[in-house]
Amino acid sequence: MTGTMRAMVLPEPGQPLREERWPIPTPGPGQLLLRVSACAVCRTDLHVVDGELPDAKRPLILGHEIVGTVVDAGPGAGAFPLGQRVGVPWLGWSCGECRFCLSGRENLCDRARFTGYQIDGGYAEYTVADHRYCFPLPQGYSDVEAAPLMCAGLIGFRSLRFAGDAKRLGLYGFGAAAHMLIQVARYQGREVYAFTRPGDSSGQAFARELGAAWAGGSDVLPPEALDAAILFAPVGALVPAALRAVDKSGVVVCGGIHMSDIPSFPYAWLWEERQVRSVANLTRMDAMDFLALVPRVPVRTQVQVFPLAAANEALAALRHGQVKGAAVLEVPE
Image 1 (cartoon, rainbow, N blue to C red):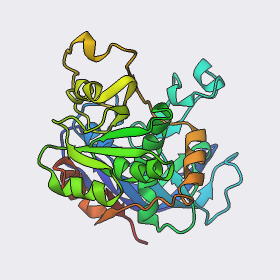
Image 2 (tube, rainbow, N blue to C red; image 1 turned 45 degrees about the vertical axis):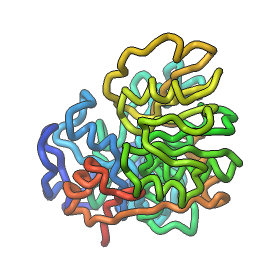
Image 3 (cartoon, helix red, strand yellow; image 1 turned 180 degrees about the vertical axis):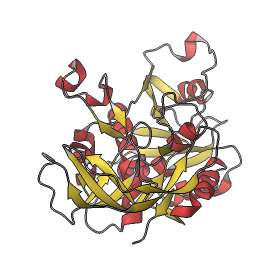
């Protein structure tokens, strides 16, 4: 396919995105060309814009929660038919050869490359993606409803796996990931305790609407000791706060790719076999398992839709906590 496309481009970290015309990319070996219909806006996009993640491509098309339709394929790009709707996540390529890839941990691949970071992403009318990291999407979801599943949903799901069989689960930061994960957790019979910014009565009410047993500020302890807590807010000070909230042998899972520094805290808060661990990226098995589970729950995504040209406004709304659920860019034909 020849011609040009609209794209919202980050020239350099710290600068606003600008709308440009770029050539429609040509799919290489193993790649699919997708006509993008929607791309959710992730907090990781803010970290890239702010220069908090090193080694980003420059200039860069952001976006790693992509929904698109296959319009062309390179050699060896698998069996996706033209017209197939697929989702594309953050992990965009892995080598398949390192010890992590060979042990089913491609999320830790030594040479991994990431969508909307080292690979141009979905803030555009077209994108190319490795066919191994394109996933058929469940029916019953519009394109804008499906887009947040591809990162907020997937990373939340992987984080939940590391919480084990926790009956009482705390979620710190009630945004795109948490509003989906609480639905999965409730489906699994867990009690969910939601922590928001202090004074965020609207976010706390939203959490209760979705079934939270309790909702309050992150500066207070929950009424019951937690078995596990998952942190989606990129605030290092929440790590010791969550450690104080979890019971003996409880686990605190840090679900973000970037977090401010964790302040020192007394060893007593970690003692009694409490754990702190991080989650990095995702595996293809995570994606397949989560996307199979989504319609059974069913997970309902709440989205605030912006046109592609309003990507800067969407990022600003996310930065200032003005998005209920997930922000999604819509890219119409």
